[in-house]
Amino acid sequence: MENNLKVWRAKADVTQAELADEVDVSRQTINAIERGRYDPSLELAFELSRYFDCRIEDIFSYEPADDD
Image 1 (cartoon, rainbow, N blue to C red):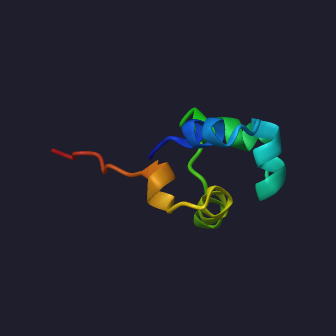
Image 2 (cartoon, helix red, strand yellow):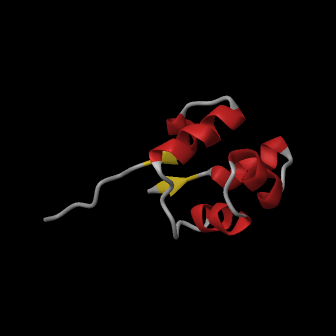
Image 3 (cartoon, helix red, strand yellow):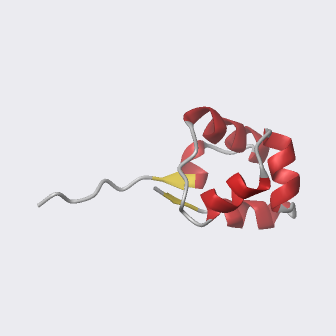
């Protein structure tokens, strides 16, 4: 799953720690999402979209792998 969470966070001028506090996760979780090492739960994806007042699709995109 691709994401542009770092872009949204920069536009809102919040640190990873501040965002983590707002959505009740650790700073490490935010960092892992931004680096593409962790896919958030649907609940967390909704929390992030609510925080930034946008659609989940504005932050996250999914391109299924081609299994040819």
